[in-house]
Image 1 (tube, rainbow, N blue to C red):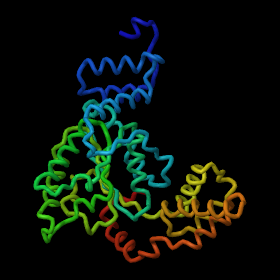
Image 2: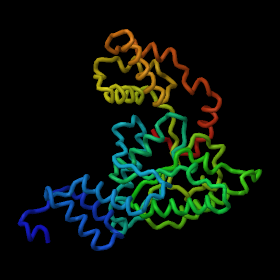
Image 3: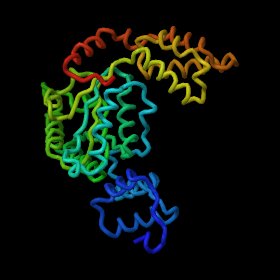
Image 4: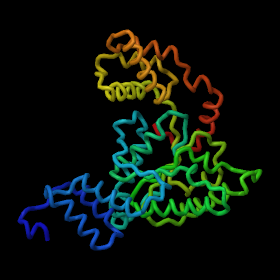
Length: 338
C-alpha cells in the first residue's frame, strides 16, 4: 500500500524485513500498522533502528516487572576471539530462529550450555549471539527471582519466562546457571531450588516460542544432572583457555578497542608470554599496561604489556587443579567451542 500511494519502492535488506515481520507477530493490528508506518515514513526504508523501535515498544508493553534485563546491540562475534566451532554451529541454526522454521522444514533450536574456564569468553559469546542475530538479549538473574515467601520464587520464574516468550524471537541468557540451580540434597532451602529446577525443565521441554536459551556455567559439579541430559539443550560446548593464535586475536581486539594500532605491537610475542591466560586476563594486562605507560608519560609499547603479563598469575596457575579437573570432565562429554 505504501509503495502504491507514494510511488516509491521500500528500501532495506530482506533479512531486516524478515526480522520486522517476526517481531510484529502477535501484536494487535493497530499497533503493528502504526509501527510499520513509523518504520518507513521518514526514510522510506526498513532499518535495524526500526527493529529496535519495535522491540522497545514490546518491552515497554510488558510493564516494569524488573525480572529480566533487556539489551539491544549487545555485541558481535568480531569482539570475540576464537570459538570457531561454536560460531559455525550458530550460523547454521540462525535461519530457523530469525526466519520461518516451518518453511525450512526444521524446528528452531532450543539453546546451548556454555561450560568452561572463568574469563574464557562465555558471557561475551552469549551477548554476541543476540547481537549477531539481531535479536534482543533478555538476561535472567536468579538472585532477583528468589523470595522468602513460599511459592513466590517459582511464580517469579514463570513470569520471567513468559516475558521472554513475549519478546520472541529473542535470546534468553542465564549466567552462571549453577548458582541458581545448584542441587540442594540437604533441603536447606526448603526445596525451593528443586522446584525452580522443575519449573525451568518443564518450560525447556514444552515451550513453543522461539526463545533461544544460552546458559553459562563455570562449575560442572554444581549442575543438576537433569539439566545436562541430552535433549534439554541442543548442545553443550566447552570453552577452554585460548591457544596462541586466538590469544593474538584477543590482543588485537583489546588494542583496537582502546584505539591503539595492533601493528605497532609484537602480538606474537605477547601471545607466547600470555600462555595459560584467559581472554579476561589478557584484557586486564592491556588495561594495567596502559596505566603504567601513562604514569611514565610514554606511549604504550609491547614492553609495558609484557611486564604486566610477568606480574600476573593467571587462574590456570592459581586454580590449576580445578581447571584440569574441568577439562578432564569435558573431554568426551562436550563439544569444543574452538
